[in-house]
Image (cartoon, rainbow, N blue to C red; front, side, top):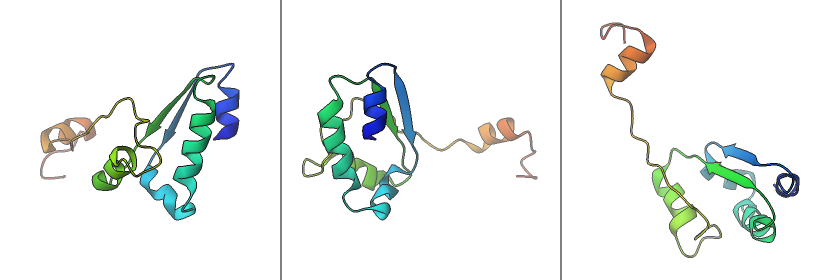
Length: 99
């Protein structure tokens, strides 16, 4: 993350991390490490970090619990809802019976 933040001083960068809440499985300190790097470089860097996750409560805790390292650092939140069966049918092109 530090290399990305340094690189983004010269060029805008978008980083998308899916299943963000699973990073803690890699290292218990990784969220704190990201927070430290972000705080150190955010004013000079041009990074747009998109953190996606499927476990709503964990994502909410990571970014909205005042005791968590990334609290207060999110600038937007999008709550995505599941597609309806009708929309899935249109996207995939299958009949309801085939689905």
